[in-house]
Length: 221
Image (cartoon, rainbow, N blue to C red; front, side, top):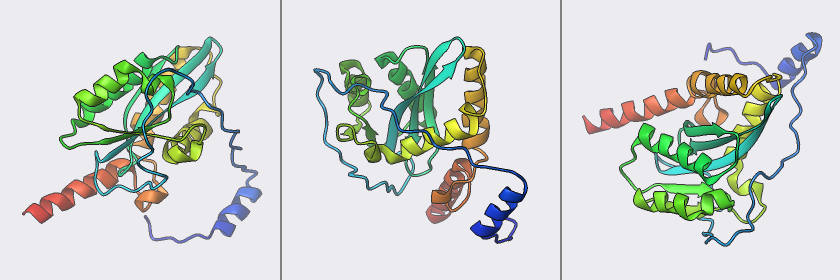
């Protein structure tokens, strides 16, 4: 942003000189169970992670956080175009209520007026009758990853990898309350508003979204 171009080799050299190392990504671990009696839906995206406007495609997934008091589960919903986290919720149990509350937050925040593609894995939480009913009430088009294929939801896997490397793995959470506060600050104060994103031309999700709507107003005028 300041107009200074730095090569990757230069960054690597400075990191070595300063004793800095990147945090190792841990192996992918499935958090949902696809063995259930509910209906599953076709994969509409087929790893084509492209959108032309906000509220066109929403990606959803669940990850886990360890604390000294026990596990927490984070359900997240990302707008594919802006990469903004439009809805998220944390709870102590990985139930359908967890993902329903995340979706309700996203709906209250974004209030989409057009038909949105909702993409998730085939887990019982997302396939449950109550969750699917909420999607139908708001006219979503449902898309699901193939069984056991994390690459079909790569954007959400990437976000959960980021939040673990940049927030969760850097801290030992003694209480669930500590973890919830840290995750709130990461998502709402840092990731959405400040963290630059390579897929967005190295601006934050909020900046990218604001530029889109500014351009729409200019075109309309």
